[in-house]
Image 1 (cartoon, rainbow, N blue to C red):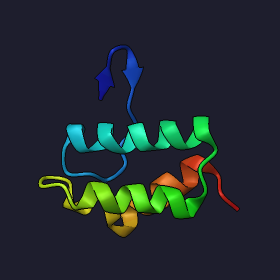
Image 2: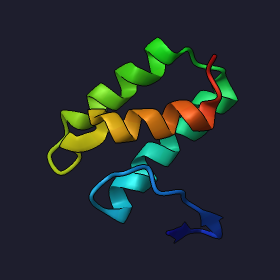
Image 3: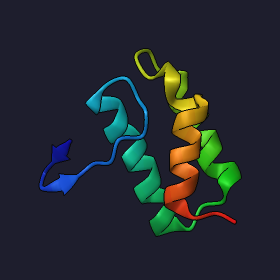
Image 4: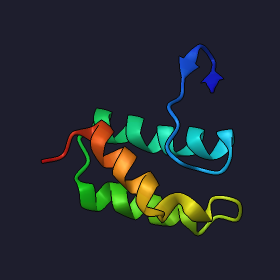
Length: 71
């Protein structure tokens, strides 16, 4: 998906809009140097939003973890 000339990776969400919302969390995490605990909390908040329930699925969390390169 491409939004405003930004290529949004596929995070395993069911829609391009879902991938974009996760991308926003990843972008914030990188800029603000969020911990995994903080990122996980944001994914949980997103999953509580209708249409984005899969934000806490294992595949989504693994892809976010990999992109943020937590050790």
